[in-house]
Image 1 (cartoon, rainbow, N blue to C red):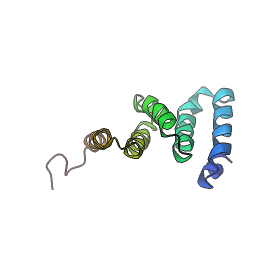
Image 2: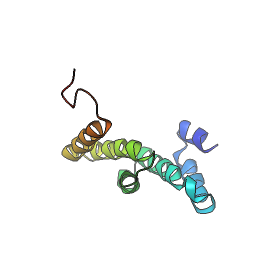
Image 3: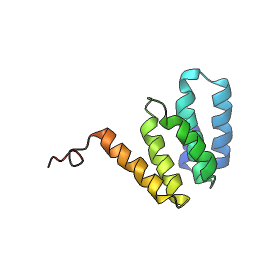
Image 4: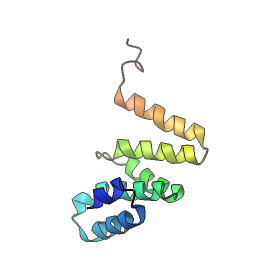
Length: 105
């Protein structure tokens, strides 16, 4: 139901469910729940709150780190912090080792 709430843009309800599951669910689920929390905050208009959560996730090595960098870049763009967004996205390209970034065609 949580992902369905997110897909249906039910941000407030999804945020409640996310925070409840974070408190009561398995520790292993927390990074994925934090990512969903950030999405809910971002798309409900709280880019500052979303940025804080995304920033925490970018410091991890989990699967959520990359998507969190994209989310943080979106927030920076929404806040008109273009250079920071560009830096985040450039860093992602280098991390992904895209051939065009490395000079290969």
